[in-house]
View 1 (cartoon, one colour):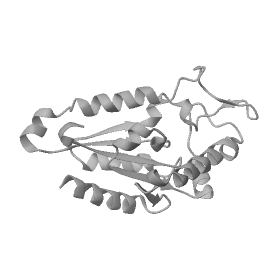
View 2 (cartoon, one colour; view 1 turned 135 degrees about the vertical axis):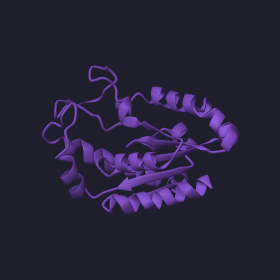
View 3 (cartoon, one colour; view 1 turned 30 degrees about the vertical axis):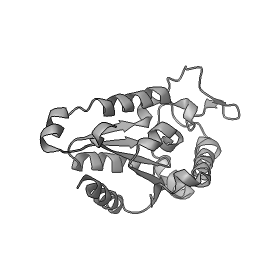
View 4 (cartoon, helix red, strand yellow; view 1 turned 90 degrees about the horizontal axis):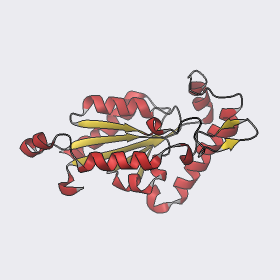
Amino acid sequence: MSSKKWIIIGISGATCSGKTYLTNKLHKELKNSVIIQQDNYFLPIDDPRHTKVPKLKCLNWEILTSIDMDKMRSDILKLIESSPNKETVAKTNDKNVLIIDGFLLFKCEVISNLCDQKYFLTITKDECWMRRKDRSYNPPDVPGYFENVVWPEYLKHLDELMKDKDLYKTITFLDGSKSKEELFHMVFAKIKKLLS
């Protein structure tokens, strides 16, 4: 990242933990900000790279191989190498802010290493289920998907993060059951310091 014209914020965590709200609110408040969301890189349903869950006769959408990470990584690198606001930045010295949102964001080492700040929202199983059961997904969750796939994959991912000592110490863990506004203000204050 030549001359460090981008501040890159990574927002990860459990499904339904408040990532999207936090991402969108930051984007609204930060001028020169751009969002890239991991959810936009899910492979098509008929892609042969998907992993099946035989017990439930469905696909596992909770693992990295369900996402086109090559494309996501490439899009991020292209974006930060070709600043959309070059003239503005040159004149005002304002930094661009890239907010990357994704439930498995830090599993990609390249993306993880680009982040100046990393946030991971945690949530309890009960709270997660209360929020998720009222959401609609395409394809929809099959019965038993949350219990057998979503939650176990989240716990596995969280455990992997905890065990990676070098990565773990670079992440700020946030309690996703707290007020969304409280979480936003905490993160926004830290980003403002980076921008000053």
